[in-house]
Amino acid sequence: MREILRKYIVIMFILGSAIMIFVNIVLDFSIAVKQQEVIFDSTMHQVVDIINRNETEALGFERELEQDYIIRARSVASILAATDSPKVYEVEELKKIANFLEIDEINIFDEKGNIKASTQIDHIGYNINDSKKSQEFLPLMYSTDKYDYYIQNIEKNTFGIEMKYIGVNSLKENSKGFIQIGLFPERVISYREKNTISSIFKRAALEDAKIMILDENAKVLGYSKNISEDLKSNSNYVFNKIKEGTHNNVIELNGSTYYISSLEYNKYLIVSGTEIKYLYDDMQWHILSIIISMIVICILGIIILDKALDKNIISNIKEIIINLNKIEKGDFNIRLEEKGCTELIQIESAINNMTDVLITMSNRLEKVIISTNLSIGLFEYIPRLNQIIMTNNIKEILSISDYDWEFIKNDPQGFKKLLLEIEENIVEREEHTYLFHTKFVRMNLIIEDRSYFGFIEDITEEIIKKDSMINELKMAQIKSRIDTLTGLLNKGAITSIVTEYAKKNNSGTLILFDLDNFKRVNDTKGHPEGDRLLKLFGKTIKELFRVEDYVARFGGDEFAVFICRQMSDEELVEKLDIVINKIREVLKEYYTEFHISVSIGAGRLSNNINSFEDLYAIADERLYKAKHNGKDNYYIE
Image (cartoon, rainbow, N blue to C red; front, side, top):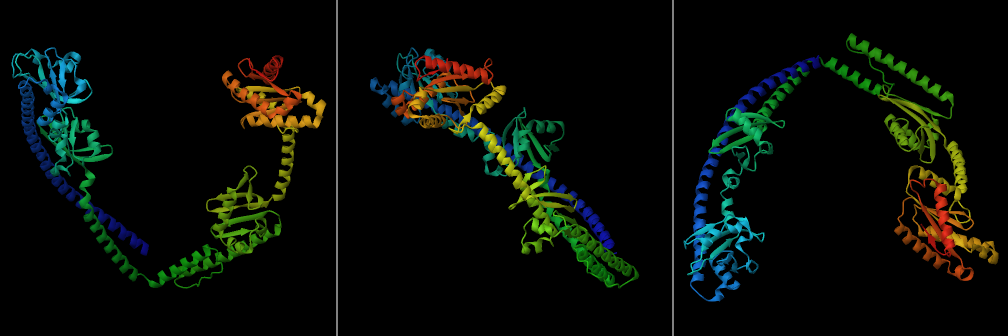
């Protein structure tokens, strides 16, 4: 009953709140739009005023600037015309004049168009015809008007430096040359930048504006820092939407809704815009206050209704719920007192009967599991009872201490966590074999919804026996591949390795070694000394090659190295020189007494040589060519 009333109250609260919120949103949004229109209109007209003022100032500045530097150029011409001293044309003197007149460069052209004097020494000798830009000053050379001049825009000169040049005719009698002064762009650009479209947004009055200016091609000429990146990057779309409709539009852009306003002025389109969501910022507090009011009303209503409900019914229901929760957690010893109205007594009686049945079933299952007396541990978790039933031998199987066992056997989730930890230490997935501390166990854990069940078996002894057999087999395999005297691979092992490698690759190098005059050692010193020599030689060549290279003894005094890559002639020569020299050093005493040396032959895999037999035959043939050539050497071709 209480829940039904609460449900109706909540429904009324939601409907009432929704209506009030909707009405407030409509009113607040309308007000916000009007306010935004006023702000946009005011800001756009400020921009128009600034553009007008900037254009007027810029026009006057350009004229004043040009006249000022024409006067400075003529001042240079006057100074040069006033003296016949050649010293005035020296670089340092011209620099003094330039500094005095606050200009950056002076160039004096003669009647042939050559720079005969300049503040820049590397400009002297430069001819007016050396570049198209310089040729713009040619009319001055032929002009008869002493007051003629030419002003060039900012450009890179022949020397790669951006300059603005002004030229005037020489005022010296019978001179057909002209004077040129140069200005760095910084002297004029700084003021220009103050009057560009993009610069007007640096003004304090527009710092917080959301505005941009487009030309007739929808190109963004300038924008304030707060304008949306979406509006800037999609200026063509915004431009077209404005042209299609009125000056006030709501447009969708990249998943966001924008309110925009625009004003056309001369060749510019001034656009103000903001996301609709920002218009709702001030509305949130109104909506929040309504929601809080509705919550307060709802809470008061629930409290009043709670007081009006039958206390006995509510208390009995609460008691039944509490006892049911205890039963769910596994406490089957709960007995409900059968009291209250008839319906409640029937419910309480049914609950008591249910707990009796559950206790009986639980005890029977435990007895059946224990009576099996198997070496395998069984377990099952019954979520409705929140009980885990398991055989006691699990404690011994997992070697769990008495202290930990008391907690685990009464904590279904803790036991499940233990089982999952065991699964993390997998040894063999298909056999469900895991390592837990010092024991190997076979475990099958089955999880279905909230329940889980399975078995655990201690197979430590089985694994130990199995591993012992595997290790013996592996040792036998290893011994069959190793030369017992030197510890290197034997011929059978390297034959197998190269054969398998050659099936998939056609690049590899086999090097064969044969000790020259080895028989003399055995005949003179005996086989033990010969064995020591073979061990020393095997150890030496193993150290001379990489870990990934295969080093083997074929038997007797024949050794081999296989390298799993193609070595060029240069690499082989360099490597074998190192090997020969090292062996001479290590076997020096044997060489002195028995003339022991080494002959080497090498072969390489290719499209034609693609088996171990072919590769060995090539290397062996070259080894004997090395012996034939006097021994103590190598042969690779």
